Image (tube, rainbow, N blue to C red; front, side, top):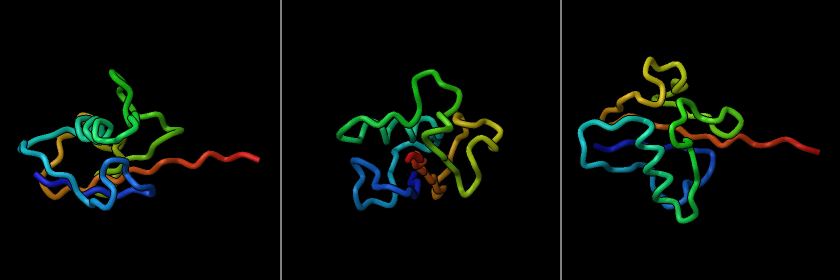
Length: 95
């Protein structure tokens, strides 16, 4: 199964890649985010262990243009081949 990736930053460990391949027929959004964390040379924690949601001050994640919070199963939503996951890091304001 191939999942397309979009982001407003370079995904560490996937530089220049626009998708990620899995040898499974089903995978949950949480598992994709955890795999992206493992592939990063410096660990990025998209989802904290045991968390039911992402930190809204750090990340915005969508599946096929729909915020993951709007999906009936949230982070446990199973994706299918060809789905697109968009990850945005939120810029911190300051002055």
